[in-house]
Length: 276
Image 1 (cartoon, rainbow, N blue to C red):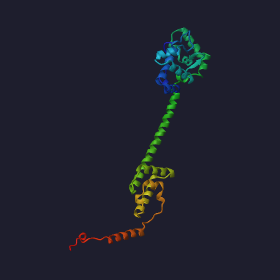
Image 2: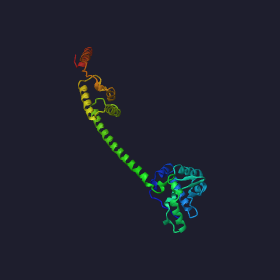
Image 3: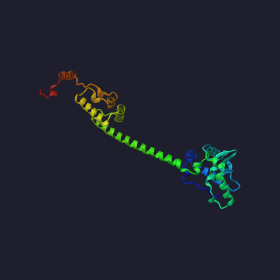
Image 4: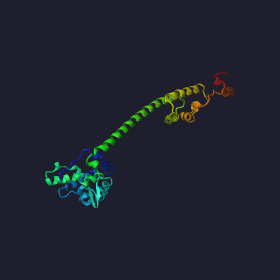
């Protein structure tokens, strides 16, 4: 045969996609190179659809190595692109691509008619790569459509998550602006997001509550709060602590001690600006 039918979307077939994934264009090219060799030997006296060339000849013709050719040929048989009959590699499905329009030879036309009805060809349909040679696009197109739907769904989910993160970050910025000791902002945001996720809470609502708590503790001048890190505040959930007023007795003691220190200082006339 001088030519055979070749689908333009044959590369979308699932089996050939696997060849491309595992061996790239080298494997894909080898497959069609072998198909051409098989088809080129088909005539009225040879309808075995077998590959007569051995690995050495094919390797020389393709610029590959014998070992690589043998490995890829075994892979083609393993996934059902070719069949291994005795010592021969065959591709009976190629017969389904041949019709009488390809030849004007009456004897060859009669052979093609007999092939269409032969049990050999019918049996090979269940064992070989009919999807590649006759309906290559459909399985892969269905898979692509499914993957596209999955990708669109993932994009939608990512968009939702991005919006949620932006919403939570805006809420955190309000809290951060109100908190007195601004240390380790990045870790603080992580703890805030973790708290929201753990308790399934709305970021803006929590932000309002925390800001109210922070402002109240600042107004009460709660001891140590002005130096507390936000990470400590979130880790220990210190917003649940009771409110405490400044220790007035301790404040008074510090004032009294300061006065005592001042009274114990002896100033000279020169220090006081007094002329003798």
